[in-house]
Image: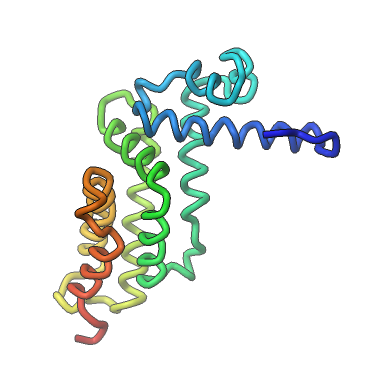
Length: 193
């Protein structure tokens, strides 16, 4: 990424950090977090490992930046989060397999003891389940057509979303992730059924 004379030092630093995060996303998607090295990320952006450490002093700091960046891409204000917008997010995710692959690799690895992303994903799932319960409550009220409460259905919705991502990554020709999610919404039923 060229840095013109008009860029401030701070802007150049932020641009370089973004470039490093993008490279880390790619390396983690290819190799997984444990096999991804700072040297590989540094090489991808034309830095030495020591140069990369100027921006991210540890591999864990880079991991946090990768996870935060992914969350920024998917961020919607809580009051705007609806099932139809969730379906749009699934469609958007189908256009960015590298991000989904990185997230899925990190999620899978995070279940192992001592993984640096374990606490992040544990807390993220608490928040996501609560958010999905709110989305379901806004759509259906206190009971879904099946009789389940939004709190009981929320973990199932989250499991569906993550499970679809894994299936799609493994066989994108056979798994229509957006279509399968729309089918799930049909399965949920219309509010008031």
